[in-house]
Length: 401
Image (cartoon, rainbow, N blue to C red):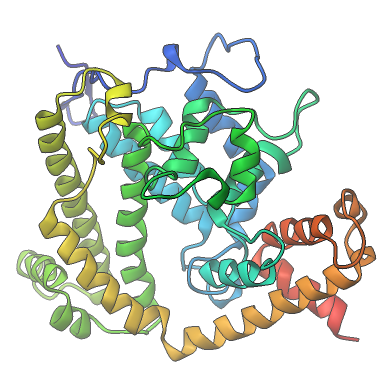
């Protein structure tokens, strides 16, 4: 019988039974460096807690999605986005009988490798690192979790479970497929899997697949909220160009005639998130029913994702993303911020590469002189860990008298 819990109003919420194919913490493949198990927390709960207490996680509060941190207090940051992804992932995993602690953990961890200034920062660092083995935010997340966080006396990194690291690296699917080889992957991933095989040729477990789609749900719908708040587009434009939103918006207006716009936006976004979640649970349920997995390994070996949106929802998502790309991500005001961010990061990297003695002492360790490969990586790691405001201030300190 499903487990229930009673709320203040006396209603009982039924939790579905645990799925046979859910990741089982008691059968975790363990950690690279063996540790005694906790008496009070599962391995996945422990992973989540380690991430929450990491310095990289705290710095996400100063890294933005689209806007620069100082442009407003109400826009999403990487921290608020990660918390929203974790909440959605946990809710979906719970509905599906999966391990909600692991799903939440992956939602919290997925953006730890992002540099300042959103995807602009990633693009700039990748260009700067051309000739120095490149930059990839997913590989940087793995690097943060396994090397750059230095909190424990016995190992570098957070020493997370195999399932968490697999989910972080493979959340969008296998990395070795369609002719790709290990040597085609970012060096950070190559180096790590040489000692801890994450089975890069398989699909990730179901919780990781849930977390990946929770990311889509969070940023698609919350970018609507942020874009409207910033005045980059209007409700009328959304209504005219995004049919799914127009239907939900109309439903809110019919239910609450004369509702003020701020509440109208909030309720519409709230309902949209529900629509996406319902579709994800429904479509995934159909796929799982057809595939009949008996254990989590069957999910990994399925040869295709078993968690996903319906074709209809993917079409709606494509329409929304085209709208946001045109009206928000390439808006002239955002372009100005992106241009400024590009100059800041490029100039910082070039300066540190040519004069590594300007790096803080801890970041000079491991370098190999001006223009060197290891110096470039140390400079890149230092910049990638910056918040938006710290990058702006560091640039001022080094380029302004």
